[in-house]
Length: 201
Image 1 (cartoon, rainbow, N blue to C red):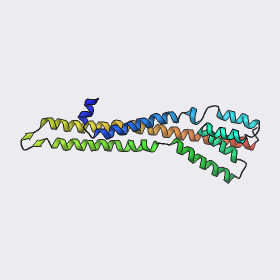
Image 2 (image 1 turned 90 degrees about the vertical axis):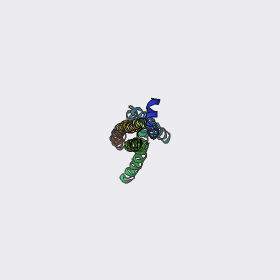
Image 3 (image 1 turned 120 degrees about the vertical axis):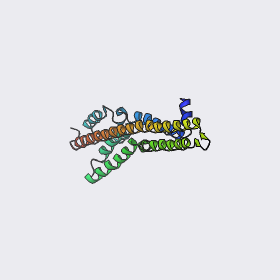
Image 4 (image 1 turned 90 degrees about the horizontal axis):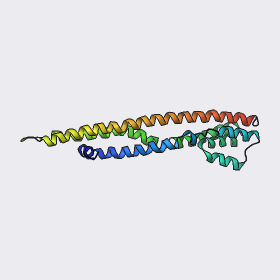
């Protein structure tokens, strides 16, 4: 591996740095976006049982809002359902924006890396080509410099693609997962509203 890095030259280091950032984001989001954390399986059923026994008090709502992001949404619905439709919708919208912000955390960096990595690879390719053409002198051709120029160009081109593809794939997967989780929250929130309107029955 170290020999490859040496052959790729100094332009490979920005790619290595961006790949480390991308890897860290992918690991962090893979953990943070697990359904068991965002939308716990039995949360809605537990809320239904509690609503059937009566409205949740402030302590229960505070605990619910801290339990998960979907719990935060459900607590918002329960706290505001007795108000006007405008107040409820406004509260849901604000909470939804906050939840979306948490779910999408760092994804903009992942998308940026997927876009920038090929450009960094292209920059390394240009550096390699400059070194390649610099091997031609009035005294002839420096074969070693020519070979190094090709190595720099090819390794950086490949490096940019290798970094960009996983970053873009992970970004698309995370976006789809977030959209699905938000859809589930919206559907479950409507169910909570109906339960509140019927007194939990």
